[in-house]
Image (tube, rainbow, N blue to C red; front, side, top):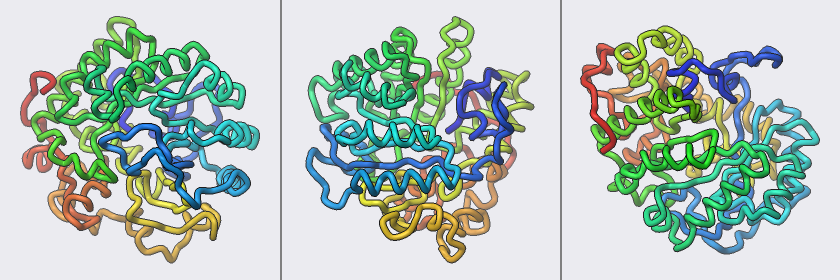
Length: 401
């Protein structure tokens, strides 16, 4: 995740300690960045919607072999002992798992910080109250456009209104809500309105995701943004973050899953926020870019461990057979070792890119999906050859495509 707000505005935001190794006031000294991964745990694959870009290709059906409550407790014990900083319960749709509140309560009691990633349609007042009572304080809710666009993406008429109500119910319960948007050519035009919506509803955080080519998302390659359209959208996000700060809305803004955003922001800031440029350079160097296999990990609904939440085609082990901590620290796992020292393996243009130190080769699962090679180029990189070589912004864009 690229915290545009922290970098461009200079205000500390939740998660800075994980991304940049910063100590928040009153907090203990943080561990080095990526010393332990955030774990995305797809606790069920069952989902009540049929989203076009679902990386787990979920359906509204039961999936045999999912972990029992007792098995999940054992995994949580190991994650807590291993020092995992955050567990994100995802799916499918995690609220369709009947023991979700039990898992949250147990995780909280043993000292784990947890949140959920949900489509929001099942977040009734009663369900939110139940989750809040269990210890949940943070929730990520996906919204991929205004009503017509969102309902089409989600494969369900009426999904938008249910999600909006889920957002309102969560905010009313004093949950910290992150609104999550995945950009494609089909919904990027709604981006300004989604910023307006987040501010009008009092949502504190907006995360804009780039499309990952995984699951059903692989079928949307033709819907992904072209380089210039992506540049325009990212620059709009930067400008809108500044505007939100100026108008007092103070929306926390992040971009996710395209690590070319980091060098683009560094170059862009030299012309558009020169007072922030030096700090941005320092913080991005601390973060180091894509951290699949080190700072991010995933456990799927069957217990398989993956380098990140999208990479279900790469399995490192299974928590029913070995503990997560043992799998994650296995020195004999060649692919995991390669991910953690990937720079020599990357193909051009990544290998000789001047920004490799703050990008780390971008999203490897997208590269493998597009090229068949886990070390091949990520097609979603939108930097020009001159920018990769000289580190100077080629030209300014004008708005959202």
